[in-house]
Amino acid sequence: MSYADLALGASNVLLNGAVGAGVNQSLFTMPRWFSSPPESLPDVQNALSLRNFWAPLEIGSALALGTAWALNRDDPQRRALLSLAGGLFLGGFAVTVTYFAPEMFRLVRSRDQLEPAELERRGRRWQHLNWGRLILMAATAVVAAAAAQRRPASGIRRMLPPVMH
View 1 (cartoon, rainbow, N blue to C red):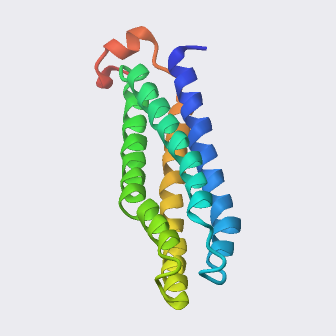
View 2 (tube, rainbow, N blue to C red):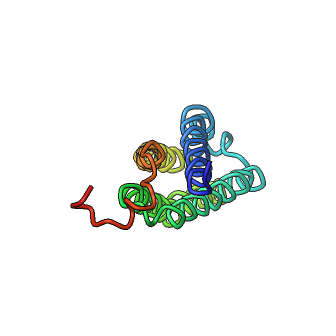
């Protein structure tokens, strides 16, 4: 197995793990957190455990996907799919760092300052919007899996223009 295939495999494991963890969190953890705020919300320390899980997973996924792209850049089919996967990943990362992570920590930190109805409303909105983010994460994983499914172009085929294949 080549390094290009190993990097693709690593990115697929990490991306699919992120999707699975995100779905699990959305089905089981977040509904409990927002069931009867502020009592049901975790304290700041417990909420930080999410960051301690998601940050390494996101960084690992980004590194694996970037490495897969770099090692497959000479393969036109894989490069196109991995470029699309990278764009989807960056989009998901952007919405995570601009809305999802900050909003979650704002809600946890302001649990005693906001009215319970406001906490519940914002928590439900977070949960509903999060399904869109999970779809984006799943699309990233599917596109990366499609790249892994493609057989790598042989050395001579990579050097020929695409019209000659």
